Length: 151
Picture (cartoon, rainbow, N blue to C red):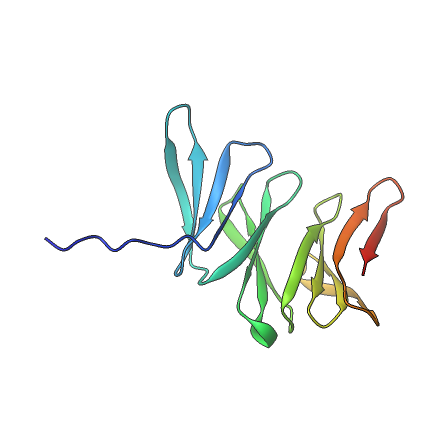
């Protein structure tokens, strides 16, 4: 009998509701439900070499970054229907992914000092802002409804 090959976890994320989590492996990502005494496999998606997973605020959507450099993409998955709903082509290495308050847009900062806003419903880029300095972090001020960028 052959020894089972060990799989390396590339990244992981836990749902904001605390009832499930996602593990990213070399060849796929897997969704697990958290039960009282064990973890139960729920679904898997064929996303190779996923390097970053970000849940939406409500936990119903997840953004999975894969690829490198100009081939970087973000796959959006609907966890209620357990199906991918779109792929965003980023064309630069994403450094940070942030969901907006309503979970209908994603704000992505990349290594080319650019912040881009993508609409999830139709997978289109809404805004792109280029900065002169290196971007350290991006966050959203929900009270003022503004994107805050620090360098």
